[in-house]
Amino acid sequence: MHLKTLCGRPLLHGSWGPLISGWIYDVWLDVAASRVAAFEICESDRMQLRCIAPSTLRRSGHLGFRLDIDPESWTQLDRAPRWTSVRSLEAVAVVCPDGEWSCGLADVECDPETWRLLHFTVDRRRWRIFGQRRLPTDRIIKSGADVIVVVD
Image 1 (tube, rainbow, N blue to C red):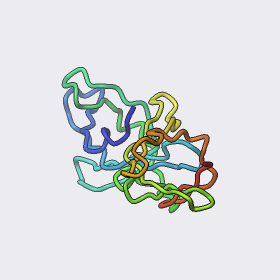
Image 2 (image 1 turned 90 degrees about the vertical axis):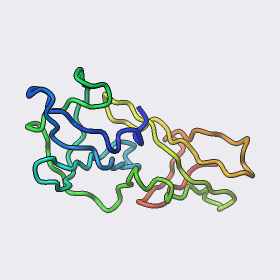
Image 3 (image 1 turned 30 degrees about the vertical axis):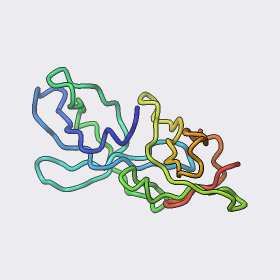
Image 4 (image 1 turned 135 degrees about the horizontal axis):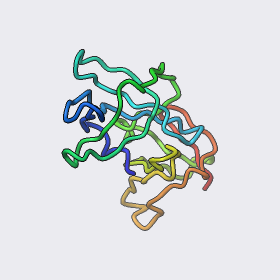
Protein backbone atom coordinates (compact mmCIF):
# COMPACT_ATOMS: atom_id res chain seq x y z
CA MET A 1 0.00 0.00 0.00
CA HIS A 2 1.39 3.39 -1.03
CA LEU A 3 0.92 5.79 1.85
CA LYS A 4 0.67 9.02 -0.18
CA THR A 5 -2.63 7.74 -1.59
CA LEU A 6 -4.10 7.60 1.94
CA CYS A 7 -3.77 11.34 2.56
CA GLY A 8 -7.11 13.04 2.01
CA ARG A 9 -9.19 9.86 2.05
CA PRO A 10 -12.51 10.04 3.91
CA LEU A 11 -13.15 7.56 6.72
CA LEU A 12 -16.57 5.97 7.02
CA HIS A 13 -17.90 4.74 10.32
CA GLY A 14 -18.05 0.99 9.73
CA SER A 15 -21.19 0.19 11.71
CA TRP A 16 -23.22 3.37 11.12
CA GLY A 17 -23.35 3.10 7.35
CA PRO A 18 -22.24 5.91 5.06
CA LEU A 19 -21.49 8.44 7.82
CA ILE A 20 -18.11 10.17 7.44
CA SER A 21 -16.24 10.21 10.75
CA GLY A 22 -13.20 12.06 9.47
CA TRP A 23 -10.41 12.25 6.91
CA ILE A 24 -6.82 11.06 6.91
CA TYR A 25 -4.87 14.31 6.87
CA ASP A 26 -1.38 12.82 7.19
CA VAL A 27 0.49 9.61 7.96
CA TRP A 28 3.43 9.77 10.39
CA LEU A 29 6.37 7.37 10.01
CA ASP A 30 8.83 6.12 12.59
CA VAL A 31 11.66 5.38 10.16
CA ALA A 32 14.02 4.19 12.90
CA ALA A 33 11.54 1.45 13.88
CA SER A 34 10.52 0.93 10.22
CA ARG A 35 6.79 1.27 10.88
CA VAL A 36 3.81 3.57 10.49
CA ALA A 37 3.63 5.44 13.78
CA ALA A 38 0.27 7.23 13.55
CA PHE A 39 -2.51 8.57 11.36
CA GLU A 40 -3.33 12.24 11.68
CA ILE A 41 -7.11 12.42 11.45
CA CYS A 42 -9.30 15.45 10.86
CA GLU A 43 -12.48 14.69 12.77
CA SER A 44 -15.70 15.58 10.97
CA ASP A 45 -17.61 16.76 14.04
CA ARG A 46 -14.99 19.16 15.48
CA MET A 47 -12.72 19.68 12.44
CA GLN A 48 -9.68 19.27 14.68
CA LEU A 49 -6.57 17.23 13.95
CA ARG A 50 -5.47 14.42 16.24
CA CYS A 51 -3.01 11.57 15.96
CA ILE A 52 -4.28 8.03 16.41
CA ALA A 53 -2.56 4.67 16.42
CA PRO A 54 -2.72 2.87 13.07
CA SER A 55 -5.63 0.47 12.91
CA THR A 56 -7.18 -1.81 10.34
CA LEU A 57 -8.56 -0.01 7.32
CA ARG A 58 -10.97 -1.69 4.91
CA ARG A 59 -12.07 -0.43 1.53
CA SER A 60 -15.65 0.73 1.91
CA GLY A 61 -18.45 -1.34 0.43
CA HIS A 62 -20.48 1.84 -0.03
CA LEU A 63 -18.01 3.74 -2.18
CA GLY A 64 -14.62 2.43 -3.25
CA PHE A 65 -12.51 5.49 -2.46
CA ARG A 66 -13.62 5.67 1.17
CA LEU A 67 -12.23 3.60 4.02
CA ASP A 68 -14.17 1.89 6.81
CA ILE A 69 -12.91 2.46 10.35
CA ASP A 70 -14.41 2.29 13.82
CA PRO A 71 -13.87 5.60 15.70
CA GLU A 72 -14.59 3.96 19.07
CA SER A 73 -11.41 1.88 18.66
CA TRP A 74 -9.13 4.91 18.06
CA THR A 75 -6.19 5.23 20.45
CA GLN A 76 -4.94 8.81 20.66
CA LEU A 77 -1.16 9.35 20.54
CA ASP A 78 1.19 12.27 21.10
CA ARG A 79 3.35 12.98 18.07
CA ALA A 80 7.06 12.35 18.58
CA PRO A 81 9.53 14.89 17.12
CA ARG A 82 11.51 12.18 15.31
CA TRP A 83 8.55 11.05 13.20
CA THR A 84 8.50 11.87 9.50
CA SER A 85 5.41 13.19 7.73
CA VAL A 86 4.28 11.56 4.49
CA ARG A 87 3.02 14.95 3.27
CA SER A 88 6.56 16.35 3.49
CA LEU A 89 8.54 13.37 2.16
CA GLU A 90 10.04 15.53 -0.61
CA ALA A 91 11.86 17.56 2.05
CA VAL A 92 13.54 14.46 3.57
CA ALA A 93 17.16 14.08 2.43
CA VAL A 94 18.58 10.61 1.85
CA VAL A 95 22.38 10.62 2.10
CA CYS A 96 25.33 8.24 2.16
CA PRO A 97 27.62 8.34 5.20
CA ASP A 98 30.50 9.65 3.07
CA GLY A 99 28.28 12.28 1.43
CA GLU A 100 29.00 10.98 -2.08
CA TRP A 101 25.36 11.06 -3.20
CA SER A 102 22.02 12.21 -1.97
CA CYS A 103 18.43 12.05 -3.19
CA GLY A 104 14.88 12.77 -2.11
CA LEU A 105 11.87 10.57 -1.43
CA ALA A 106 8.68 10.39 -3.45
CA ASP A 107 6.55 7.80 -1.60
CA VAL A 108 6.68 4.92 0.85
CA GLU A 109 5.11 1.49 0.67
CA CYS A 110 4.02 -0.55 3.67
CA ASP A 111 2.24 -3.77 4.60
CA PRO A 112 -1.36 -2.77 5.50
CA GLU A 113 -1.75 -5.67 7.95
CA THR A 114 1.30 -5.02 10.15
CA TRP A 115 2.04 -1.39 9.14
CA ARG A 116 5.73 -2.28 8.65
CA LEU A 117 7.55 -0.13 6.10
CA LEU A 118 8.68 -2.20 3.11
CA HIS A 119 10.57 0.34 0.98
CA PHE A 120 10.77 3.97 -0.03
CA THR A 121 10.36 5.20 -3.58
CA VAL A 122 13.35 7.38 -4.43
CA ASP A 123 12.99 10.63 -6.35
CA ARG A 124 15.84 10.18 -8.81
CA ARG A 125 17.79 13.13 -10.09
CA ARG A 126 18.83 13.43 -13.73
CA TRP A 127 22.41 12.34 -13.03
CA ARG A 128 21.22 9.12 -11.36
CA ILE A 129 18.43 8.32 -13.81
CA PHE A 130 19.54 4.71 -14.10
CA GLY A 131 19.99 4.34 -10.35
CA GLN A 132 17.88 2.24 -8.04
CA ARG A 133 14.23 3.36 -7.83
CA ARG A 134 13.42 1.59 -4.53
CA LEU A 135 15.18 1.98 -1.22
CA PRO A 136 14.64 -1.03 1.10
CA THR A 137 14.30 -0.16 4.77
CA ASP A 138 17.09 -2.59 5.73
CA ARG A 139 19.65 -0.21 4.14
CA ILE A 140 18.88 2.57 6.65
CA ILE A 141 21.62 3.21 9.23
CA LYS A 142 20.24 6.28 11.03
CA SER A 143 17.22 8.48 10.60
CA GLY A 144 15.64 11.63 11.89
CA ALA A 145 12.63 13.72 10.97
CA ASP A 146 14.28 15.26 7.90
CA VAL A 147 17.32 13.10 7.05
CA ILE A 148 17.94 9.41 6.43
CA VAL A 149 21.46 7.92 6.27
CA VAL A 150 21.72 4.76 4.17
CA VAL A 151 24.37 2.16 3.33
CA ASP A 152 25.77 2.74 -0.16
